[in-house]
Image (cartoon, rainbow, N blue to C red; front, side):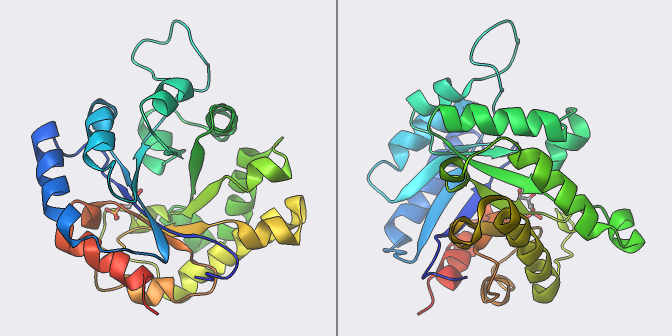
Length: 257
Ligand code: 13P
C-alpha cells in the first residue's frame, strides 16, 4: 500500500453466491462491526439481481456496491446482458471487467475487455480490470510478457484522466479459489510491472495514483503481509469475502496504522 499517493481498495467478488436473503443476513451481520475503515475503500461486487437491494442495505455505510460484469454496448438485442448505464442508475460504483472466469467460460477477450472499460467509464463507473497468468504461463517464464499484453490491450485508447478512474486487479489464475496464494514478493513483483506499463503509457503521476489490487486466495491470515507490499494497493477477494469475520479482518489489515 502507499496511502500517500493512492486509495487502498478492499473489494469482495461474490461471484455466483448468496441469495437476497443471504445478502441481507451478511449486511445485518457486518454493518454494526464496520467501524470507520478510514484508510480504505470497501466494495462488495454482488450478482446483478441483488444489486438494488444491496445498494439500499449499505446506503448508510461507506461500503460501495459493484457489479461483476457489464456489456460494452449501450442498448440493443443482447439477451441476458446489462449496460453500464443500467448499473449506474441503480447505484453501482465499481464493475469487475475481464475476470478470468469470464475469460475462460464466457469468451471474454482482451478486446471485449477494452470495449467494456470504455463503456463503464462513459457511464461514470470505475472498472476493476482483472489480469493474470496461468500456471503454465508462469512456469514457461512468460508472466511479464502476458501481463504486458493484457494490460496494454485493456487500456488502449484511454486518456490519463480516464486511467485515473481505473483499478487493476492482478489475479494469477493458479491462485484463484485454490487456497494457493502468491507470495507477497510474487504479488508485488507483478503489481510493480503493471505500474511500470501504466507509467510508460500515461506518465509517472498517473501510475503513482492508480490502485493495483492483488486477488487469489487472499484471506484473513495472509492479507496483512500482501498489503504491506508497496505496490499492492488492496485486494479482490472471493471466498473470504463471503464470511463476515474473514472480510472484516482483511479490512482491518488494510487499516493498520
Ligand atoms: P478467491 O479469493 O476465492 O481465490 O477468488 C479470487 C477472485 O477470483 C476474486 O475475483
